[in-house]
Length: 453
Image 1 (cartoon, rainbow, N blue to C red):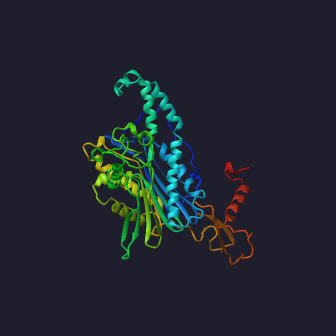
Image 2 (cartoon, rainbow, N blue to C red):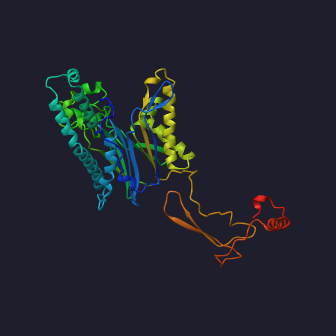
Image 3 (cartoon, rainbow, N blue to C red):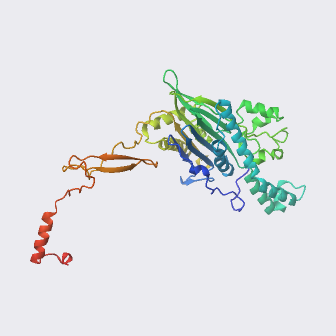
C-alpha cells in the first residue's frame, strides 16, 4: 500500500467544494454519527493520522423516495467526496420516473454506480497526462532505490500523483422507493436491516456483501481472471488495497499491470459493479436500518473479539433507542460507545502507542422502532404572560417547529374579551403606591439626587 505523502503539493485535491446534496432536504427519519480516526499515543492525547475519509448523506426526495449513502474512502478523500456529490444526481434526477418493477429500480442503482465510476475516472485525465510526462523524464533501467538517488524530485512528484490516483472508496447506498427498500454496495461498508419475526423477536439481516479476500465468490471471480489465488490469500492486499471492488483507485484498475500480484489478470480485477439487494417491502416487521463504514464494525471486532458483530451492533442501537431523544443521538451514542471500548482496550495494552482506529460512520434510518423519549413538537403553547388570575385574552401565537419551515397557530380565548383582539392586558404589578411615594418625596425635596430632574 502506498504511504501517505506529505501534503505540500498544490496539485492535491482539496475537499472544499460544496456538494449539491447539501441542499437536499434531510430525511428526518434518520440520523448520522461520526468519529474521526485516531492514533493512540502514550501520553493519551488525541491525534488523527489523516483527515476524515468517510462521507455520507441522508435525504428525502419526495414522499415516496428517500436516499441514504455511506462512503468509506481510502488514500485520501477525493474518491469519496466525488461519489457523495455524484451518486444522488445519478439516481434522483429523473432516472426513477416510470420505473415500477424491482429489476428496473435495481438497474437504475447499477447504472448510477457505473456512471459515478466513469465520471471519476474521466476526471483523472490531467493527472494521468502529468504522470506519463514525468515517467518519460525518468532514466530507463533504474530500480526504485537508484531512481530515488538520481532523481529525488522526480520520484517525489510521481509518488504524490500515484497517491492521488490510488484514492478510492467503498460505497453502500440504500434507496426507499414506493415503500420498498433497495441496497447496493461495493467494498466492505455494510447495511443491516433489523426486523421482527413472527414471534416478535428482533432479527438482523446483512443486506450487503463484503468484497474482500474472505469472500469465496470474489476469490473465484479473480481466479477466473487468471490470478494465483493461493498467493493472493497469503497477503492482505490486492495491489494497494484490501477490497476486491470499489469506486475509483485508477492504479488497481487501468494501471493494474504495474502490480506484480495483479499483472497476470486478463481484465481489470478490481471492479465497480455493485451487488444489489431488494426490493424489500417495508411492512410493520421492518424496524430500522443501519448503514456503516468498515471502521464501525471492525473497531468493535478488534476490541472485543466478538464473532457476532452485527448482532452486537443491533443490540447497541436498540439500547440507545430506549435512551436517546433523537435519531442523530442514537447514531452518535452507538459510535461513541464503540470508540470508548476500542480506546480503553488499546490504552490498557502495553503496545498502545502502535494502535490506531479508523474513521467511523453510522447512519440510522428508523421505520417504526419506538423512540420513547423523542422530543415531540408542542401541540399547544403555554405563555405565562397570558394566563393569570385576571383571565386571558385572544392571542395568536405562531410556533415554528425545530428544523422545519412549517408553522402552526394556536389561539388562546378569553372569556372577558373573546371578540376584542386588541384588548389591553392589565398590569400584573400595581405601581400606584410607588408613584404616590415618588410624587410625595419629590414635593418634599427628599428624592435622591440621581432621581431629581
